[in-house]
Length: 455
Image 1 (cartoon, rainbow, N blue to C red):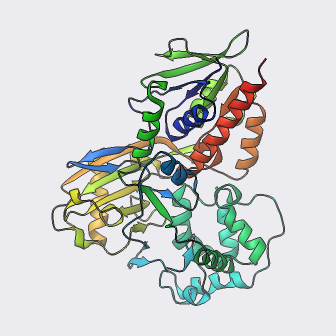
Image 2: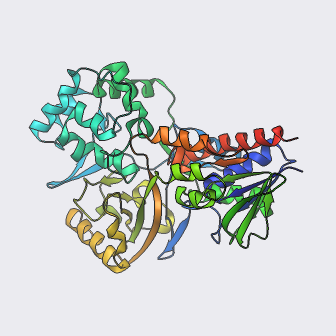
Image 3: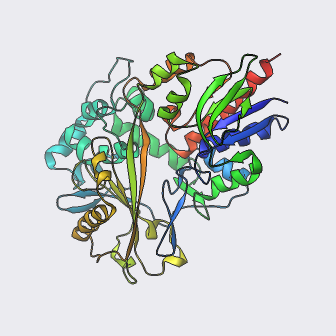
């Protein structure tokens, strides 16, 4: 019987194993994970008796892979109860226009009137409609693209907080092609990001009415729970793999705490790039060297639960984002607005996102100091008292940085992998849950192709 060992029990690793078993039940699949429960960042924490997501709280529904997987597993899906985001400004919160895509308005009139930018900043952004299109096909930094088309003020104040925030990154280091290839395509096809946003919204209105975000009714943690339930004893937790060794007769053997001499004809590494690099160094040094060029930064989530009667203090919408360096957090989600739950009662429930490229030192502070700083800045914006309960969750090295040239680096790294070794996960093909699910299906296919090639 052919054997595949998947190292890593996050959403990517679980989906790889599920797809392998689904496509060929004769393949013996084992998932090894060092945590006490599978699921990785798709987990909940308890705060004041409430279950609050510690990582992503939903999926981008128009990238269909996660939503389709949920339906395949029989999970009911729900959309947010509110919509619309706000921007932190020195004068207070300003709502993003409704006619935007990736934070870019599709109506020049909206650009001209929006109070989130100065008059000068708005006029500079409108020059996007007149500028020539870049002809150079090489990769470009996301910040360079935005600054060239829309100017520094629109980039730094309005768009980078949204787009850079999704990667906890610096837009001037991120690759446009690897992070938001849509923007590159807009410029090439429409000659303007504003016209590109307009075309994208026109296309969305002409399509179906699928919400932008969805999640399982019981929360995002229901997805890995359902996968783990389907896989059963194939998922082994509390196992820390420290080495992968090539067997003389072919195949791979695993060493580490609890690994118990596990072996496979193929291995799928669904772990962060730094961990994959350490495992690959003895068996694929050139691939490991390429992995050393992939960076990741640490982030965290601060869950805040406020007293009864505070829910009405939150404006309509889902939350707000913050320009770089303006507050101790990069964004805040009004969870009790976005995903209301009877258990919340009349309490305001918020999640603050902390840590990013260049701001990781925030996470070095004690929990109490982080909570106090977040609460103080929130009370300056909104009529909120001190929170009655809180929780800080740190995710070390959790956010890959898709820097300029990322796609080429990943291609070179994979070209150096030995047959039978597959590496997948958010560090390579996309940080969102849908991208992880898509990449996991592709990784399962590569592993099966290898098994079928064996004598």
